[in-house]
Length: 411
Image 1 (cartoon, helix red, strand yellow):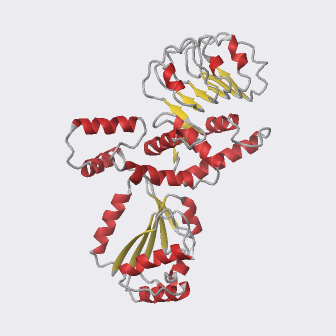
Image 2 (cartoon, rainbow, N blue to C red):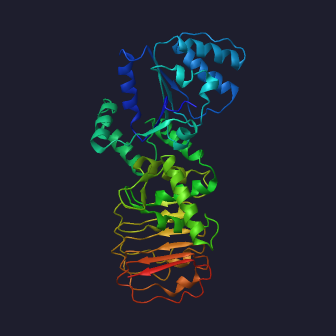
Image 3 (cartoon, rainbow, N blue to C red):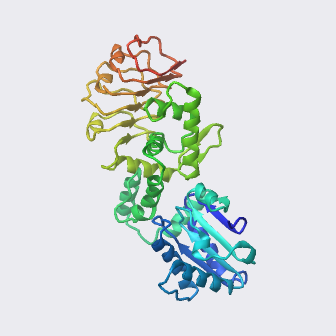
């Protein structure tokens, strides 16, 4: 239905104000007799009440009163009224689920003449299911983002207010009173909430462990997911990789992951990453993460690990020189990412025993010379990654690690 007459704008982040500006200009042009911007919202489902709401919003722009009668009668009247327009532009904004345009009362393509329908969505699936021609809008570049920020920042001059907002953003939390939670964080969280199942949600949240603008190698990501027990068919690597790629494509279609300029890599947008870290810190989330990656830390503070019952911990890509020797037990941590701490030379004997449930340990690109014998106590360990540990000389016996599936030690 509506093939070629409807365009689906598959949004990047930060472009919507530009779309609204363009629409305002079109309203005063000779191209369309009327321009209708209808916000559908993330709560739309294919129910009679939801359908009536969309019909009412369109009818209001057309100055048409629809009777509270059957859907069929309302649909017929709305279609007849739209047919009276020389050419209309209908923008259905914030579409999260497919809409049956025929049931709403939108005329079919052969009678639309010069009229156009545009829908904006964060889901490629919505474009496909509504048979719309997809057009992906990329994220703003740095200059465009700065220009939009300056335009939207207002007249706040107190340095303390900006410092507080900056600190909150560094913690990946919406600043108090900023409106970011409602305007940015919650809409993106809704994209997360609409993911097909809890497994894919957990796979997505894993991506926030990487630093900002990090090129995530797809095969590495899938192996992490496998070690955490998020993928089935453990004994058939081809099936595992196929399932992993499918999940990555699903997240890309939902605009939660991005294409990378490098082959077989993906990226997570900074804003999406901030929101995913925020989601990972919410009390109702079953998998809580401590993310301290890529922020120039020189030490891992013991008290940070004891604040919550974390499941995933990432201190990757920092300047850490040494690790705590006597940690309190962290019985819930299953993933520990310490790679790319190039100044790290030693793993204390009292460090690893704190992580009894550890499934993933990555120490790649560090300067460690050996691993302590207590490594053998990590009986749940499924992935041990030691890529480019050029100074590594000896390893303790790993024969007791019965669950180890991924062991990579490349100098």
